[in-house]
Amino acid sequence: MCLIYGANASGKSNVLQASHSIWLLFYPQEKEHTKVDIYAPFELSKGESTRYEITFWANKRCFSYILENNSNSIIYEKMTYTSDKGVMSELYERKRGEPITFGSTINIKSKQRNELNKETLKNHTVLSTLNKKNIDAPLIMKELYEWIKKNVHVLGVHNNGKEIAEEAQNNIKLKKMMLELLNKADFNISDFRLIDFTVPDEIAEQIKDDDDLTDSAKEKFLRPTKKLLLTHKTTIGDFQIEFGLESAGTKAYFRLARMLFNIKDCECVLIEDELEDSLHYELLIHYLQTFLQIQSHSQLIFTTHNQQLLDEDWMIRRDMVWLTEKNRETASTILSRASDLGIHKNVSLKNAYRIGKLGAKPILGSTLLINDL
Image (cartoon, rainbow, N blue to C red; front, side):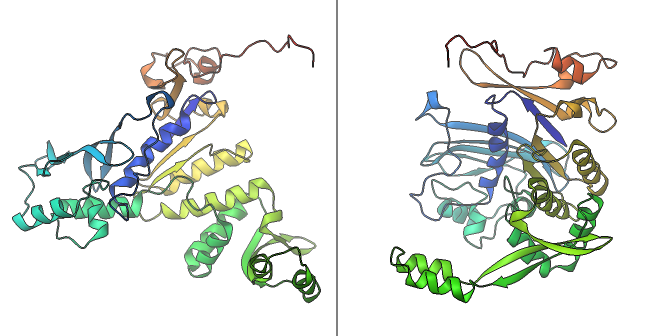
């Protein structure tokens, strides 16, 4: 688990976006001239290339990846990994305009090498080519590709309540787990289901007779849809509420509960911006405890403003806490880890943060306004 703290606009979300760049390893562009999705340079560096470096574990191996790209193409990429001998070895290296080279530990056939060089377009990463075409690549590449495809989840995954409910209708294990999580979170939710919804006849006639609406707008309003209803259980009876009318916390936890299902049987990497949004602090702690208890090799990376978490040292180690601070001269983001800042183990990390020993806090001006309003 990894927590990222920092002032507003200090670069926390950008750190998540950068971590999310690994997604490009398996998702290719549809056409050769399509822009590279993740290219989002710093405003003062527009037109320059962006460089990422990430180290991660997959299938009990350590991988280190470097990627440099601009809006049109991949300029450079290199993947190293722990080989069967337990040492970091080159998997492949690629420079723009040059053939892909493979390390000496990779058992690659001439046909495989030629096909990868042919099919890896300028806006593709080498590994993403395996998604575009059934290439007989070396086993280590196939295994890594499948691991990323299965285990690395997009930022803000499962953000549609109806889609979650539809998935749960077809997966009894998912629905059972979600209901258990929602019940333990004290929402009094005993069931949820999708129902077909059509506009009542009287309103439908009014829509049809409304000359101010275009035909396409009328068709959209009259089209049958589905409603997601949540059943709440009380001692005096049950009642149903449409998902859109539920509290913000209920809707947030509904999708967070779906996220937890992912980690039971895989080594997932989950990335979430401001995890605590709309959640009571006790429920946030409950969720993190649940994550830690049911995960085995999964990783939850999230940004937060909740300083109380810094005092939960029974659950959150100092090497889990990262801090972002904006460089006042260049506006770039400086990333540091709390365990590297020399804070004595007997000193409260929360207090150290509040008095500014860890940095990553906003520098605020006076609350007195000079100009009359």
